[in-house]
Length: 562
Image 1 (cartoon, rainbow, N blue to C red):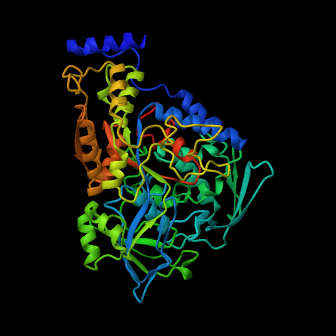
Image 2 (tube, rainbow, N blue to C red):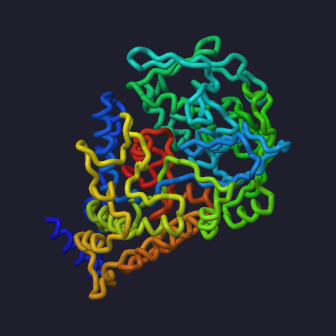
Image 3 (tube, rainbow, N blue to C red):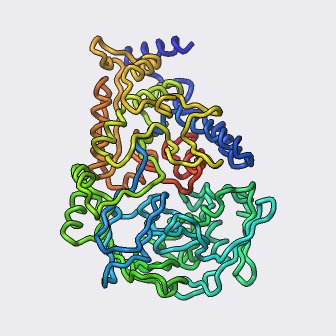
């Protein structure tokens, strides 16, 4: 049957009249949604790990996710800067730094941020700004452990279903008004509401009442010091969620009074309008004093932060730029004290020189490509054929070469779940054992770390594509698409190497470079064929990587099930 379908597709292509296949080219995805729900309800850690491997198998079978490298966290920091720390999730904390007698730290994290609303942010650089200017029930300590922030502690019921958090007395918003447990009730329900459009809104699905008209099963005590959360099933990473930005409170009065929040008819227009200019109310170590869009931001110490007496750096000045050559030059000229991007051609020298200002931190994340499964490039194909095309393209990519020449601090990746991720059962998820063996057992993943041209051609031939005597795609069955990427010598360098890898068999990939905030918007709207992305762990459990591709997730850029 498969051979018959392949012959039919080839014939239609040759005639130049490819009609839409009766079967959609996008994968059926209800089973994946159900599988993720079962993982979140599973209490046996061994069975839960087995189900998570099954979920990653399903995801990788679509070919929609193309892992390239496993993240590390390279950055440069001036000698004398003390007290900075980052986490394996990629969050960077500047509030407890010192730099000699200086009261200002000058940094670059990225270009213009898209959103600073904790519920609406979906980027790592945005999250770094959020963790320095807002707070939650819990936060990350310098040693990576979780510690109370706005809470003093919690209790959990014997069945693991009810968490009761006790809040600090005297918590204040940056405008001096009280911050209470009621603010958490409002903010969590707001972020979980689909109308808000929070990319991470699906994380609230662990809480009872998620998706109901009544809202989440959470409540605040009359004195505002106790916050109660009822879960659907025991959640081993509940405190990790309590420290994640989308769970941070926002001030209802500021959100709903902002110009542009509602349209002229009283309908919700922009839920994040309140945090698009400097001066908005926050709750953490800093407040945003000024924001010159596409140029600079200035954060100053928030005197109303509960732990303000321990905030050592008075002021953060941010240069907004994505040009890593300009950023690197500014650092070397003494105009920046901290940067976390360097030009690709400077990386070999930094690695070899032993420069004491160059650091490579641990990170838990994956740099990957994302196919839009609804892209016109798959029109006329069955879902199996479209998946074969995507997987063939993935097989053509020489990940080891990308790691050796462009992403120099990052090892090549052939799984989506990062190599160092825990299995939730005291071990590592990415390993072959008696219970599970990866498709490519030798490289412990789903594909070779180097290009497999022969395997890619075989997949494409099964899908009905023809090749000439030189091993190139026939003019009757071409493949072409656009690759969306943000500026930066490393990102653009990866794109160029992939372009060269695919050209080996005649696949035409054009590269379109857009600003980082534009890239996110285009991909969210589905206006792309293939785009570059990165995913950092929200917490050290595979479910955070797998759950992002359920059909209702705001982070499901592949459009699976959508």
